[in-house]
Image (tube, rainbow, N blue to C red; front, side, top):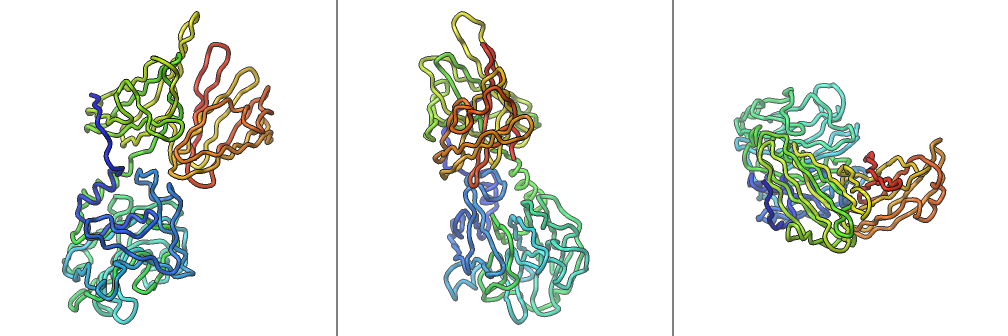
Length: 472
């Protein structure tokens, strides 16, 4: 079944599901420390917290997502709310009340244990709660760096501390969550890595008395005032006044399985027809948006669907087609979509020229979060054309490096692309790439910031076919 509906404000399934769980605070860190909940507990950056370019955030399906960048030499952190001293009275959760803390991290740090998210004093009793990464110097059982855990502390020697048996400092994005049921026992803390419960060991189990309440603000990337500073990227931090269940954490992890995809060339009219096919391989009904965009980044109306975007709804094991018929003058652009886990798709191009049979080619969808795309070309007796898309919300420049069959560089070019713009052309016609003629080899398309999506087409006489790319 296929249906069409206008798209609302851009929001990933992950973001929507986090908000649906009613967090006390949710800081997306998309270029600022604002709270995404209606409570509006916005934070302030301290000691040089920076933010990545769009596209540098956690892999939650948000093409524009950013992340906060922390360098622990400077002692940066985020204080929430920004106001003092009233800040300390918000988010007050005692040691016998449930709480969940979660965030995305990307780090390679191996020295000095680090606080990810906390409401915890930096002196005295160190009262409060935190989600942390132990690099082996924090009094825990030895066994290597990078193990994450959760603490609930009231007085020195009186608290709960549980750590995972796995490391998260491998330089990849990881989704960390710690959920505590308020029981006063270490067994009431559950740790989740990338949505899955992990084996844990108890470092401390003695919350017999004393309050964990304190007057310090919530902090991201350290304790209060910058203690145990984090080093790396951090994103999508949230605190809940409940202990999220394993099913709820898994749902958030399943949300991240959505994948941004681009069809870098959409052509209809003037002898061209495009069709997109999608199938749902899962046992559940799924829906996802499909956006049609012009070469200049503006919404493109697809007459066959009566709009610039649509929502595809697929029954379990269902299939859908979107057609752009060959009617009228040639119109070109590209397609952007976010596919849920279990949905796959591809496109078909058809060219109609009077006096010869129609020609068709299957066209794969490209990733939208790559910074380098590589294709193999053969211009010995053929012509290679490319569609290059900048799916990012900021302008970028695409550096093209062309190598021959021996791997020797035979041409370089730079193609500037405004935000969300596309260009389609014969590859060897770009300045500096004329040496491709009569040769074969590979081409790298690279951006220093933002992202790039590339499609290759090879033409030879009346025939043409697509050229798959390797994205990274």
